[in-house]
Each structure stands twice: as structure tokens, then as C-alpha cells.
Image (cartoon, rainbow, N blue to C red; front, side, top):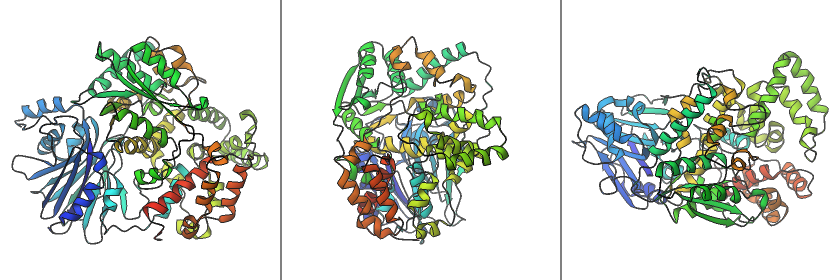
Length: 637
């Protein structure tokens, strides 16, 4: 695991400045504290910060082919590298190291751009081929590892694992992208391929791009997608057995390391499944596990994590975090480089901090909710879909639209009485309704929040277009499969993977993701939807397969999540701080927000008439970004 960065001259063969490349590389020192290397030749500069995990002795980067015409910088792990080595040796290739990074170099020599089809793992890499005058970049299928890039007006292409490495090049234009602001306040993150800056982009998951010096600028192309065929004839009982074997394979591949290794154990189904399989595979060798507890029982899952730890006799460590642990607020803006509004980044940061005291690699249960059907919103969406299917859109839209307008908004009432949001959802098409469900600030709130200036800059753009773009490629009309696909393309990448990568790498901790093993994801997408959700129960197949391995209370308790008590913070210890941030000079100087509506959000939340904790947190994070990353200097389009 590491951080990569570099410069590629798309026009000529100018030699990059060493000091500039050094600055870009050192901005990611936290990603690789063990070693750092720079490589410069005419037209190219490569930087690498290394966290040594595999082939500690000879796995330094950049890594080259035999005549040094091919150079690679790579972030991630290729879990099938030993099998690939054997295949490549059969084609006549020889290896100088035992590293997975050299496997990519040899795979490029053998298969060119199609080498990505051979790779099983989490990765983002840049490979320079001097003979072709090209730079090839690729990102793993599920977007576990990040890749940012920017093309400057003078023809230099900048790239890096984190956006901060690109920003470290002072020639990078910091004009903000209004459409990214709309996406952020809709989703809580800036969706791929956009970044908060107009000049920078993210390479999307499952995409590759080949830059050739002196040729037309390329467009990244997809090399992978998940297909929800739902046509696997396997019985439910046989699917349980096969799932167990596939979980064992995915976990076993991720146990290869030359450093201490363990797992996150939250007490939820997914992390518990990973720990149970690790214990099965490791036999008498105890699994290292760590959990984060909270002094507020509404957010504390420690007792369930302890059940699993005791059952498998793990080396279990627990750290309790105070419910008023909000000192990381400004640190988050530094970590994520652009506005990011998932408050669970705080406990994720803390559990990574704890884990790194004992291990260098940790396995997680991330990705399970998307593939197995675990989110509560999935079940609610399916209930709405049954009602939508009962009435044609031409009848639903005026009927439920009218009811949604006149029905009062009862945030304080029991859920079954909160009909306004349900009526509004029933009046929409499926994709629009699901987008509204996951929105941080729904369209009417953004309409009131954004100033006329920002609306003018948006020119009618709505973040719903992100979902519509992906839905057009989903290849399924199954209600559950469609929203699983949308989450895989948006929330999993922009929120979950971003959160875990930055929070863990801030502590130089490598996190591996067996539930995002792409053959497992592909197989699950062939199973019928009723194997995932039945009535009010989610993750049906996974839970049944795990019944012999995990306590009933772990499998069948209500989902808790990894949350922090924002609502209480903003009515108590952070009341003045959030008011200062939201009404302060930095947001005011952007000219993008309506002060009267900002005051309404603060007052209504403060007096308890509404829970506006999520919108206020998103505004607080945006203010922190402006204040720290831009030093209060907004560059408008």
C-alpha cells in the first residue's frame, strides 16, 4: 500500500522540476512512511511513498522492466499475483522480485492495456512506456483505491492517489466546480468523475485511460461493470454452501502479508463474517481484532463485537470514544481534500488509529450492504415500488404529488405517520425516488439554500443526473438490483471507499476488502433478489450461511451503523461553533448561500422543532474546506 504521484508531458519531452515532484510526493508521506522514491526522465516524473507489506526487501518503486523502458508506480494489492507470476513465466517472463507490482509490469509487456483483466485486487496505477511515448492509468473495479488527475494548460498531466498531491503543484487551477457543489449538498460527497475543482478529475472505478504524447487527449474507458442478471438457477441451500466457499477464497487471498495483520470487528454482520472466516482459515493462530466503543449506548455495538471475539478467542482490543469526540472536525477537511459530509469518518479515523497500534493490515466488512442487500432503505424502496407498480405514472404523479403538497411534514411523529415524504416518493419515477431517499439535502432544501448566483452558475444542473447516467447502464429493471447497482457506482465509491481509504491511510494502515472481491460481487449479482431481501429481513442468504458460525443476536439484531450524535452536538457543545461556521465570513464570502435559510436551519434545529443535523454538518464541513484548503479564497467560475 502506498501513495503515488507524477507528471507526464503530453506535448513534448520537457524535464519536470525535481523540487515540484518532491513536494507532490511528500504531500502523501502518511500513505507510505517506510520509503520514498522519485524518478525523472525527459517528459516524465514519478513519485512513490511506500508502506511495506509484501516483498519488503525488494518491492521498491518505481519498478521497471529489464531495459527500463517501462516504469510503474502502483498503489494497492494484487491478490492473485503469485498465480499471475506462474502464468507469465509460462510466457517466458522472468522476475527479479517477489512483488505484486512487478507482476503488473510483466502483464503490460504481455497483454498491453488488457492487463487489467488479469488483475484481482484493489489498485490504482500509472505505467509509463517510453517506446510508445505513453502513460497508462487504471483503477480497480470497485474503486477501493483512488486516482486523481489534472491536465494543465501547458500540457503537463498531473496525477496522484490523493487530490492533495495534485494540489501541491502550484500550477493547478483552483477554480471551484459549481456542479460539484450541487453534488456535495445532494449526496454528501462529490461523485466520480468530478472533483470540487474544475481542473481535476477522478478516474472512475473499472476505468482505464492511455495518454499518448503528441496525440489527441483521450477519454477514460470502462473495462468492467457488474451485471445483475439474476438468472442463477442455484437453490437457496446450495447458494449458502457456495457463498461460504467464496467467502473463504476472498478472505484467504487477503491474508498474504509480511507484516502483522488483523480485522475490524464492529459487531455487525459483515465484519463478524470476515472475522469468523479468518478464524476458520487461521486455525490455532488467533485473529487480531479491534472495536470502537462509544459512551452513548445508542451508538455502542461493543457487546456484539465481544460475542464474536469470545467465540473465536481473538486478540481483541476495544477503545471507547467519548460521545463528545469532535476535535477531528478540522482534521477531516485536511484528510479528504474536498468537502465530505459523512460524520462516521470520525469513528472510522479512531478505529484505524487503534488498529495501527497493533497491525499494519486490517480486513474490513465494507461492501457487504451493497451486494447482500443490507440497507434498511432497500426494504423501504421495495415497498414503495410495489405501490408504484400498482398505478400508472400518469395517475400516480398528480394523485400522490397533490397529497405530498398538502400533507404536513411530521418529523417528530412516529414513522408510520410521516406520510409527506412517502407521498412525494410515490409520485416519482424509481430512480428519482431513490435519489431523493439518499439525498442529504433534498431538492426543495437546496432550492432554498442556494443563492441566485449559485443557481445561475449551475444553469439547471441537478445531481440527479449522476443517478440517471448510471441507471442508463444498469441493464436491469429489477427494483432491488437497480438500486444496488446505483449504490455500487455512487455511495460505495464516493462515500464508503473514500472514507475508509483516507481515514486508514492517515495512520499508514492498509485496509483490505474481501466482500468487494470482484468475482464474489459478480456471482452475487447473478442470484435472484429474494435471496437477498425477504419481507422485512435483509441479507437473507448471508445470514443463513453464517448461522452455524455466528450468534443469533449478532445476525438478527437491528442494524445500528457507525454514527455520531450530531443532533445533540449541535444543540449542546457545538451549538456556538456550528453557528459561527454557518453564519461566518467564509461561507458568506462565497456568495452561494441564502443567509436567511442558514439562520432557519440553525434556529429550527436549536429549538428542537426539526432535526437539521445532517445539513448543518455538511455546511460545517464545507466551511472547514473553504477556510483550510482554500485559505478563504474562493475562485469562481
